[in-house]
Image (cartoon, rainbow, N blue to C red):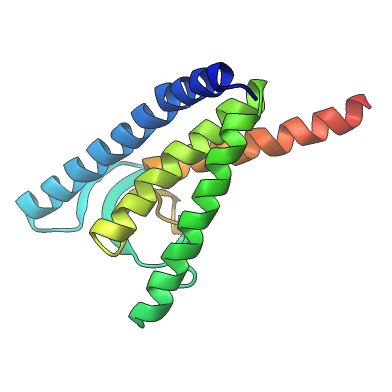
Length: 162
């Protein structure tokens, strides 16, 4: 890849990833602000969605939550390395794959920022039906999940075309 294409791909990457990162940061800051203002973790509720702040020290769905700092920082380092690979995939891919990796990158940057700044990721979207509650998540998780789903669907449909 020549420098001109690399520069163009990098600019496109930031046009998608940075707004996702900023949307995630603003939503988390607002929920943290409301939590501090009203001094309770459950800020808003409806029939199917609660806005309930929790601090996730693990990865997806709270798994691998360690109390030992060495494990926590090691896991954060592994996540940072994965983000570098996602960045590389986003630069080198094309079409829908590129946009999927850009969504994953934007969300991942939001969550790694929180891991480094707060030593935990603020999750606050709690979807529920009656007594069933899905795992609490945040805006970054939405973009990561949608990006991964698009990549999986793209692979499935590419295989079926061949």
